[in-house]
Picture 1 (cartoon, rainbow, N blue to C red):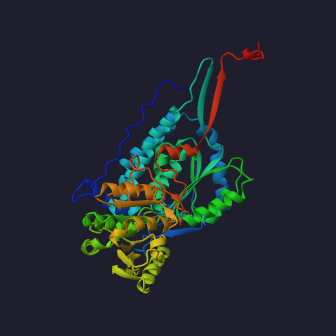
Picture 2: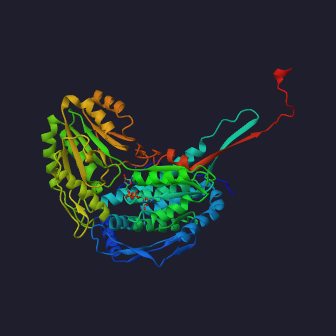
Picture 3: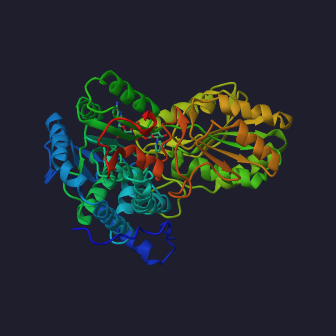
Length: 541
Ligand code: NAD
């Protein structure tokens, strides 16, 4: 029986640890990495009370050492997927009726486990399986995931507080019901935190989830399942299956109880999901909620008044952190002719000190890209730029996949503002620069707006206030996250709610109230304390 209230956590971000030489956290993560590297982990499917180790499995290879096998994961068949959905629907009533404070307490505990005893393990899994440096792993797998889990509790409580007015003899209230069926969460390789959040956010609001993580994030996905389990999440609230994405998706999308899709990944895949839902629309009980955060072609525009060092640093950090594999990574840059020589010089200086290698060697700023398919795609873009009259390689352009999938930080210079690499998402450490005539900076903003189908993030760097106002107005729909005098990446939960429009997604702003609202279907309850007993109204006298 509920005889108390619940104080939600503070709206405060998890502190990023430094991992300085000789620090305890550094020692811990190195030890954990080394032991996990040789653990040969076996990862099951998670369906209700069962952990199912299938006969068919796939190996997990670190992208920076692709011949090494660090473990394997189970491959589901169609029966597993059906069972996972049915099992979660069986537990749905129990979970929906669990008081929100109890649901919150479970996810709060999960956050504390990640911040504490699981921190090294989730960071090491992200370093091994997704080739993140310790800093990139820490800001993602530890801090961002903790922030999502904690801050969503605050947002949930704010949603519940939003109630209609009660007047006179009538009481009104909104019950924020979870969706009636199940939510299908499909997550990308590049953020451990997104994997955890896409299931946890909908589950926190009382939904049950079928989770299909990316084949390239399964090591850290397993740690997330371990954490949810230890935090006391009832089995079946989140069922995790791994295997052929099309098989899993077709079964999920052909189920009459599909109530929502929580997707992050590429634009093409999202469009396929939307199309399938559209063609199945008569099958569903509900209109499924479709939430998708997808690709980007994120820009940096330097106004002629900008400080060249600020611009170069925004390019280096914005384009090359995590090998450019962030949906928010800067990948097209517009710089004024008057500053181009200075910016190129700065870029060359900064980039020449960048080294690539295994994430366990802490000196590296960059490691490998995620897999062979990605490596080949990036190399094709580089070769295209090398062999085209409209472009040249200003910096980098080297690659080597003999041990890991390594691509050097690469800067392309083009004379064509609509060159392929100015338009298409490459998802690697490649940035293209277009130099404009200073007096054309306003026309350049029109180019920025009209060059790509995406509208995720963008940055405007300037020391002139009027130009900032102009850019804000003229680039209103060019980016869902707009940065002034900063790089376009590195959004922090609670500070910069994240998402974009156009081909970049439904812009439901992960890590905010707006996102959580998609996982509820409110019911209005009106109670009349003094119901009328005769039909005529007084004016009829
Ligand atoms: P992806 O689209 O290849 O995969 C995403 C998920 O979809 C994975 O779980 C994958 O197994 C699944 N999938 C792949 N093909 C499928 C199909 N035909 N049917 C159903 N499911 C399928 O993306 P990725 O390579 O893992 O991640 C990189 C992409 O994600 C980039 O485009 C990036 O911009 C985007 N992304 C966007 C955001 C954002 O917030 N906007 C954040 C992170 C990543």
